[in-house]
Structures are given as C-alpha cells and as structure tokens.
Amino acid sequence: MTDFLDSCYAAIRVQEKSIADTLESIDEIGINLRTKRRIVLVGAGDSYAVSEYGKWTFLAVDLNALSISPTEIMDIPLDSKCLIIGVTASGRSLSTIDAIQEARKKGAEVVVLTDNKGGKAVEDATEVWITKAHVDSYNVSPASPTTTAMAYLLKVAALQNSSIQRDLLSDIDNLIGNGLKMLEWAEIEGAAISKMVSVGRPLYMISDGPNYVAAQIGMMKFDEFSIIKGLVALREDFCHHHVFGIDEMDQAVLISCSPITTDDERYMNVLLGVLKMKAYHLHNDLGLKTSLAQAIPNTIALQIASHRVVRRINPHLSGFKLPHAKAFKIY
Image (cartoon, rainbow, N blue to C red; front, side):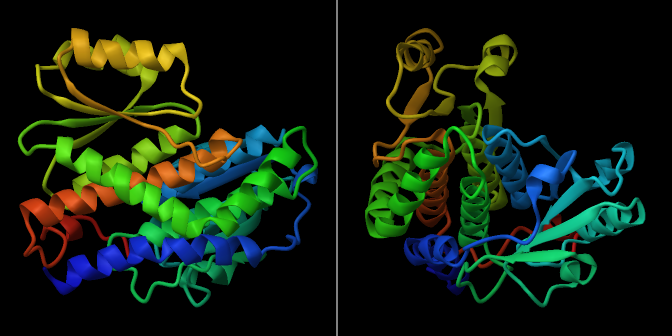
C-alpha cells in the first residue's frame, strides 16, 4: 500500500471522531437565517454536493434555499437580503472564491463554511463556519472535510425552530454518541459494495432527496481514483433515460432512507430481475430519524466502498491521475 492510500483511509476513519467534534463545537450562529429572502449555497466538487445537502437541510426547516455551481452566481439576482454560503473545505477553491467576491459586489452577506480558517476564502466572509475534520492535508480524497461540512449544516438547521427540530436534535445526539458504531456499519456496507463492483462496467449511484448527495459523493469517490466510471442518477431520471443504455451485469447502488418501502423493493427487483444488473441496496438502520441525518453514514459507506476497490485493483496508487487532476486550474 502507499502513503497516499493510507492518508485517504485515515481521512475516512477519523470521521468516527470528527463528525461528533464538529457538531459539539456549534452552539449558535451569528446570522439570523429567517431574515434572509434567499439563501444560496455554492461550492465545487465535493463541496458542490455539500451545497446540495445544505439546500435540503434548509428547505426542511422552511428556509428558502438553493444550491448552484460557482460560475452560476452571475445568473442569480442578489441583494442585501440574500445570504451566500460558500463551501470550500480547503478554503482555496478559485471558482468559489470568485463567486463569493461577486456576491459581495452585489451586496449579499457571505458565510464561508470551511475546514481551513486560514484559507483565502475567509477574507471576504461576514461570518466563518469552521469544521473540525482533523485532516492534515487537503490533497487526498476529502472524506472527513465533506461529511463534517454536512454535519455542520445539519446542526445549523437543527438550531432553527421547525416542525422537525426535535427529530433533528435527536439525530445529532445519535451522531455524537455513536461514531464508532456508524464507522463499523459503514465498513461492513462498504466492503459488501466493493465485493460486488468489478472493473470495466459502469457503476450507477441512484437516489433522490438528501441521499442523492451521498450518491453524488459516491460517484466522485469512484471517479477520482480512475478505476471505475461512476455515474449518478436520480431515481426517476434513471427510469426514464439511463435504462436505455444498460447492459446486463452493469452495476448499481440504490441509496435510500430507512425503513425501506415497497417502492424501494420494487426498484431493486427491476434492477436485479428485469435489467439483470448487479445491484446493492444501501440504507442504514442506525436509529436516525431523518433522511438528512441518514445521508451522512450512507456517504461514509460509499467512501469506504471506493477505497476498498482501489486498494484491491491498484494498491500501488500514489496519487490522483495526472495531468487530468491539473487539467483546469482549480486552486
């Protein structure tokens, strides 16, 4: 094995502690979100998926939120009643920094959600939200910085008065108190998925709602190691479009909430019986009440699955594929 892969795995295992530490670090925020006409979350790469997660957490507590890619900031009308939340774990994503600066020019208030309080992104922020990912480098597969940012947004949502506040607070207590149990579950599920996966076939991650974020991150994890082509699909979009290109023994992971429904069972029967795919149903029964919270351990299971596959297929991998990783200047 390589130092690179060992560092990537360490950034996964540290989530046993980092998610709880992040959640416990947040007692309040300085901005009254209820006064904002619109909340726009923006990020790139894994942080774009986190922005999508933030959209779901805020919509769930009746806040007007949307997520966009950094370059789309030009197409959004903004003013002093708008809040931009720039998500960048490293604090150095150039496109996100550009979006933050553009938002400030338009008069919007800016929050930066980051794991690096010394990053350039914080220079233009009204308020900075700091995660506690406990990683030493942002040049490995960013497991803990991703889920701790998700956890931070979950806690912010739980601080808002809402019809689901009690369930959110219960889920936060669960995540704080059961880090080891969550990682052990994710190791088992990740191992099972990795055993199903074979090289040379596309791997579809299928979901919707908050768990679609787990699917997005799963796709990124498989893709960034350059071993398997990961694809992400909404459940309904897969039904309407992706099925036409499916070959027998193509691969899929259906990510859903728990408890599972008859629709989940029907979906799996189609994947396995009609389309003849290799398919796995990922869902957790960790006592979490909301789909928002369930998406976090589901994400970790997919992080572990991709890591196990790359260790099996290319245990000598020493870094991301070049020059692909440098094709666009992103930092």
